[in-house]
Image 1 (spheres, one colour):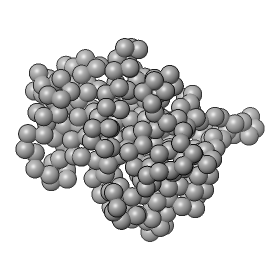
Image 2 (tube, rainbow, N blue to C red):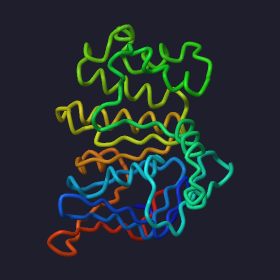
Image 3 (tube, rainbow, N blue to C red):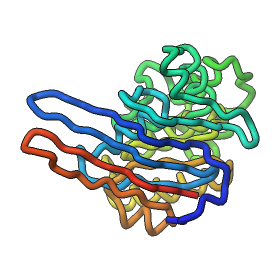
Amino acid sequence: MNPVLNQEPVFSLREVTKTHSGGGSSFRLSIKRLEIGRGAKLAFIGESGSGKSTLLELLALLSQPEQCGEFKFQPEPGGQVHDLAQQWQLNNTEQFTAWRGRHVGYIMQTGGLLPYLTVQENIELPLRLLQIPLRDTARQWASKLAISAQLGKLPAMLSVGQRQRAEVARALAHGPAILIADEPTSAVDPLNAERMVQLLCELADEFKVTLLLATHAQRLAQQFGLSLIEHRIHALDEQSHEVIIDSAVAA
């Protein structure tokens, strides 16, 4: 990981805390410092339950922290820096929805394609929601990702690999600044896992997208040159655990 941030930060976090409680136990993700430079390719590494998905949900503007010293977001190069800590205090949910819809592409761990829409309709969905002209976007992405023959099919008719590529197409169709992928290799064999990480890295480079990836596959992340932030679980007592991210900078 680069010790100096040589790109303007897309995200800058200080003293951010998110807690989950349930079943007699609690978990706390404590971010002392995290800066993510524009165009970074970053992998959050750790075992299940170490807060990787929790952190991705914060960065995708899907979740609100309990404590927030600083949380700044600059999606566009040279653009406005948004103070998310202030917006959370104002409870400005509509603004978060707008930022998330326009600037973030999200690939879910459990798969995010709507089962009643065709592949083409799924890819076009974010464009329709943002009122962006459809043009030939779905067909162009399908051609790039080798799923042109699947455009008229429902997700249930696709292989696992085809569904993943359709999810990538949908996540990138509206031209987001940030691509977030939550455990995209967890449900596929090693060969397809390698192909998926390689694909995400190549697309991030081609379209100048900041890539944030949660994965168990540390070897793959290292193989394709992603910066790593490791989530280590610390037991506070028998019922409480914490992961601390301190002085983490990814350029």
